[in-house]
Length: 316
Ligand SMILES: Cc1cc2nc3c(=O)[nH]c(=O)nc-3n(C[C@H](O)[C@H](O)[C@H](O)COP(=O)(O)O)c2cc1C
Image (cartoon, rainbow, N blue to C red; front, side, top):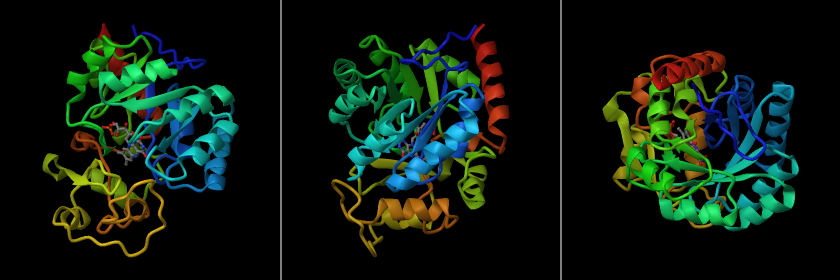
C-alpha cells in the first residue's frame, strides 16, 4: 500500500511532486496536468516577470478546476527572488519551493501569507535548520538531479541521514525515473518523491521539441557537469555550449544583472532560454543523471498511472 503524503494542508492521492524547472520548462500547463493526475505540480518562477508568473499561476488554476495542488519554485540565486516568492504567495499558491541557496526570510513571508515553505536541501545540517525555521517539508536532492546541484553525494547516501535528523516530511529527488526508484527512496525514509526529468518527456511539457529530442537521444555519457555562473555545478546534456563552458571559452554578450552574485562567465538565464526555445546547440539543456533511461514522450496522466502502479507493486 502507498502511504499517504501529507504536507501542511496538502494530501495528494499520489506521493509524487513534479519538480520546478526554470525558464518555462515547467509551466502552468505541466503543473496542472500533474495536479489533476493526483500529484503535486510546480511552476518555475525563475526567469519569468512578475506578470508572467501571475499568468502561469492563474492558467494552472483554470486548468485544474480546483483539483490538486500547485506550487511555485524560485531559485534563491536570482535577484528577483523576494518579489517572485511574494507574488506567488499573494496568488495563494499551495506552497513555495526554493533551491540553489537558502533563504531564511522566506519562512517569515510564508507565515505572513499563510503559505507552506519547502526548501531543497542536500544535507542533514540544512534539513535541521529548515525544520527549525518552520519548513513544512524538505526536498532532499542528491547529485543525480538535473539543474543546479548542492552536493556531489548520491541521494541514497543523504536520505537516511536526513531521515534520522528531522520529523517533517522528506521528499526525495534526483535520478528517480520509475515507481521502483520511488519505492527505494521511501524505504530510505522519504514520504514522497520529486521527479523532473521524467516530466520533461511528457506531452504537456512546453519545452521545444528539440529539447525533448536531446533527452530522447541521450546516452549515459552525454550527461555532464558544468560550472554555472550561479557558483554551483549544474547537470546538463553535452553539446557545443557545454564544451565551450568546460574549455572556458564562452563569453557574455549582454547582462541583465539577474543574479545576486554571478561569475559573469556567461548568462545562465540566456542559455536556458535558448534551449527551451529550441536552440540546443547554443543553449543549456539541464537534465537529470538518469535521463538516458527514459525513452518515450507520454501524457502526464499515463506517466502518473504508470508510476503509481510500479510503486504499489514495489511496496507490496
Ligand atoms: C530542465 C531542468 C530545470 C530545472 N530547474 C530547476 C529550477 O529552476 N529550480 C530548482 O530548484 N530545481 C530545478 N531543477 C531540479 C528539479 O526540480 C528536480 O529537483 C531534479 O531535477 C530531480 O531530479 P530528476 O530530474 O532526475 O528527476 C531542474 C531540473 C531540470 C531537469
